[in-house]
Image 1 (spheres, rainbow, N blue to C red):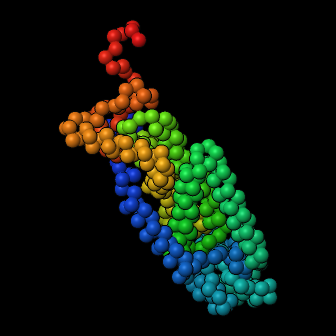
Image 2 (cartoon, rainbow, N blue to C red; image 1 turned 90 degrees about the horizontal axis):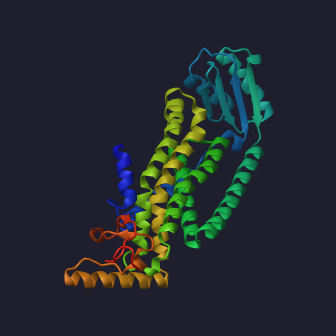
Amino acid sequence: MSRLGNLGARLYRGEVGYDFIGNRRIWYGVSILITITAIIGLAVGGLNMGIEFKGGAVFTTSSKADISTAQATDVATEASGHLAIVQELGNGGLRIQITEVDTAKANEIKETLSDELGIPAEKINADLVGPSWGEQIANKAWTGLGIFMILVVVYLAIAFEWRMAVAALVALIHDITITVGVYALVGLEVTPGTVIGLLTILGYSLYDTVVVFDSLKEGQKDITKQTRYTYSEIANRSINSTLVRSINTTVVALLPVAGLLFIGGGVLGAGMLNDISLSLFVGLAAGAYSSIFIATPLVADLKERDPQMKALKKRILAKRAAAAAKGEPVEDDGPEDRQDGDYDDEDDAAGAVVGQRRPPRGHGRTPGKR
């Protein structure tokens, strides 16, 4: 078995683990800092909306120009009076975007580009884009996002509980805010591909969260019938037991997206790949982070406010204090504590990490007798 596989098995059995819940204030602080930075970026710089949302003209040349991309940018900017965005296509042609251009102005710009670039006018294709189309796309995206959020909250509230639904919703908002904030800070153009990427990451963001929630739901069965572990400690066990799975899933998903972003967009210069790949890359990473460091710790915080969980925690702490005063290990309460499996006493010293589960065993009973 590989080292990672061995680590995953030990995490699953509770032999090792990290206290995610105990250090949750650190992760909350990190998330708040990143989120505030993203919001400041949005407020100060705003989003660089693409031509599909602003309206304008797109000029595409079918043959290679005699001047560089930088020179073409200067020519198009001077001819239109607006900042032009020029991209080199795979066939050597150019794609020139200019916002706020009407039909008459587009014809003038086309003639100027033909003269300056040395390309016949018939080999320059001009397409006008109205801002209303982009507005429709944006409105439909917001509508789809709102419906998705409502359905997610309803489903999680039914399948799990309302606290998990609230935590998942907070994690989703966290991921979307960070992703949009990165676009504002980087200044990359927002296109319909970006919108598609944002909607796509919602599912990825929920995947790891639901996996941890499912493990937590299983671990909290009959929790009030035992006096060994608090809800937060069981939540911590759920995160650790699914940690390697979450890492593997995230890495496998990020690798192809990273290829599109860094190799396709950065090395090969296919700038249009950046539209969707950046949103996917940032969203996947933020989703993996929020499921481990935000969603589950938030559920534990909300659950620990429940009177039953408060009473359980009080009994557990009193039991541990009494055992510590006597210098004895914490003993379990018998078969009722072992409904979901027995735990090693040596793991009680770990505190926030739930111990290793083993098959139930009796207390000095003679085999064959009840």
